[in-house]
Length: 234
Image (cartoon, rainbow, N blue to C red; front, side, top):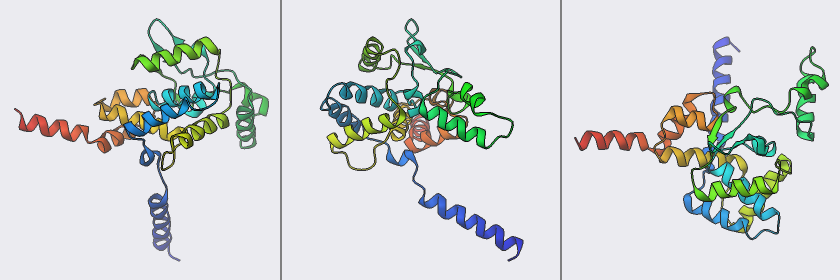
């Protein structure tokens, strides 16, 4: 096989993979589906009902990742400024962090597992350390206040977060796939439809690449609609 044929074959494989790979923005919930999901949380037994509602709200409106929720500490809340501060580092030695540390150490000869654990927890990227306003709606603000009254930190693991979302989705009888990252995509889509510009949207979601924010805005059609209105209503 020539180099050109090899490159063509590699490109074809990547193209096929791109066509078959499903992205979270394809599973974004509609406003109605999100409301049904929140209603269904109350049908779960206590304390799973409140935990599920908290997860759905902070993921579906603030765009928190599952890892951010599972490591959330009430010290992250700035109550005066109504901000949720995702730190660059939060000391943690939970099972998930230990597994990730072991994996990192196995791929780096100069890093011990104990050293890798000391570096945990950290958000996905440097850009993920961010300040998020949580007074976007009264129900969101009240839910966060009630969370802080009940807990010092989120009491369960990432796997529990997945289970709570699955339980609520099953109770709501929602069609399609519902999972924590699709709730994050739902938040991004909602803010894009509300007209949030690319740079603020990138900062809110903690994306490293501005193109991701531009993609959500492009999908929403908001920028196109605004440009057309400006052109036709001079």
